[in-house]
Image (cartoon, rainbow, N blue to C red; front, side, top):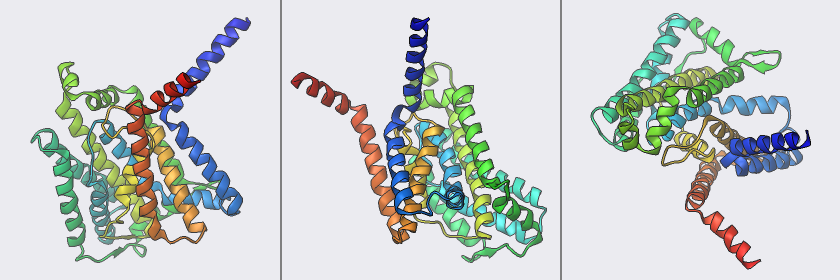
Length: 340
């Protein structure tokens, strides 16, 4: 009986180590950061502040989920933040026109899908580099966002059709924000698709080796098209949340938004070369950057430092990933063992 119990324990810890994988360092860093802020900033661990962190980073999380699929497949969507801004402006114009809220949301999501599909067609079927395509559409979508209302922000707070959306975005049930519930649902759905669906397995296969995936019967073009279309959908969802939180659609993009989204995905352990990663790591990456930003705000540090912090964290995360892939850490352990 003791042998059976010990065997079960070994299996449990083996599975746990595999599940944590690349996130061990991130979890340790996040824990230290939370403890430090909890001691130095008494307001940090209050429920109000924690829900504020969740709400403030909801747009980043949604965009990061879409980017996780793209990066695992071996690609990168540089236009995702610009697409969110353009779709948000269209969402604002629909609300301004008094269109039914449900219809407005459906049309907005379809527009997001179409922008993502446009990228997907050029990348998958026209065989243009994803960097060239998404860099080009970044400029196009940014311009579209400015042109839609002559560069002016659309204030939607006073419109009747916006009120149900506003109540949902800022509402709560038993103290738990509806927005947080929605984020959890999106995370669970994304995780299930990546881990248990044939579509998710195809994404990993393409990211690991596109040619091998093709030779094994995977339709690489169709799967890549679907991944970028999904990225466009995430931009559509994020635009609704953004407009709902700000009660207005702004044509300009936060210059740090794209960096923060990519940083969250890569910090969470998704390989920038594709083929490895997951939703759990992305969520941890978003939380880590959100806690840092909240800590800077509570400490009275200028928000202008956000880009600097995120940039250095991104470089460090990718650098550690490269070192791990090159076996530098294992060589260091072997060298230490040889000296002992």
